[in-house]
Length: 400
Image 1 (cartoon, rainbow, N blue to C red):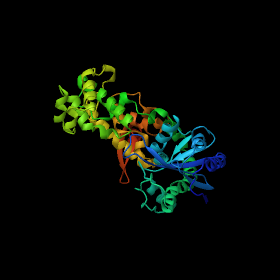
Image 2 (cartoon, rainbow, N blue to C red):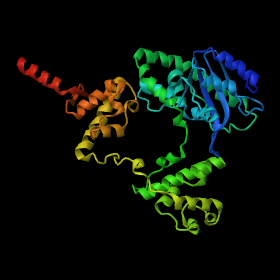
Image 3 (cartoon, rainbow, N blue to C red):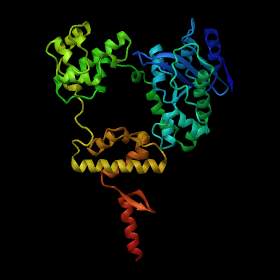
Image 4 (cartoon, rainbow, N blue to C red):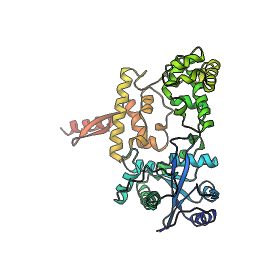
């Protein structure tokens, strides 16, 4: 494989992208910094196919990333391969308003061919290529220039290894017939909304202090305000105010700005500075949360009751058995809250649709309806249908 020097000019980038545009796939990774900013600062882009690989310097004077961004977001003929690429895709969305498409994530693909829930990149490389990655440059400051040869070599390795793994992974997916399982999952990755922060929805990431509409209304307003402040200043939202402090103010709103000095997590300056004034205005003007936005009442282990909770536990056991039998990550099939919903009587669930129904949902539904039971065979816990058990017993009795 040909490894290029660090690309720092638009012409060199355009020539690279022209060659890569004829590939069936490219592997992509980025290095970025966001410890001190709201928006991630793109510091390096690595890209490869089976023949060549390069690192691109977005911080180089005069470099226009358009040839690269067009390849990633406009060229539908080239598959873009990432590993755990959520943050990489977020950066591309910030730059273009679009996601790479078509897209493939090897971390998700591993869930379809193994019981690995969220395999890390180093473990992926070791399991497929038997190569141990040098992690020495992992915590480097990628914004500093010049980059060392060791840093560039480390960064490019992320895509050169992936370009060797992906074809082998794809071959295994085809052999197992599970490639179709991933189509919908990969399309979800390509939804722009996954990578955009809606200030009006920011409150949902914070542990809700109860279900009081007034409190939740303040929480929603404060979270949206904090998001705007952080974006405007381009600093992490936690630098404005931590989640715990935000929830505390929502639950126990100060009556006047001077009271902000008594809030844990805020400095004394808040009682008289401009940001404190803006916060108080938000608190005073916040409306109660609308009924349509109230979080669902059902929590883990809640209104199922004792019998429903037992059924949910049986479903989780069934999930472990099935995941082991077909060598797939349980998380790809379903999640705990969905099984609790099934136990509670809900039926409009992803688990009861498409390939998930064929692989697991049908048995899960039959277990809930009393048509499936557990049995121990050769020392292993397995599933068995009630009708099959009855038939086997009748056959045994008849033979006697």
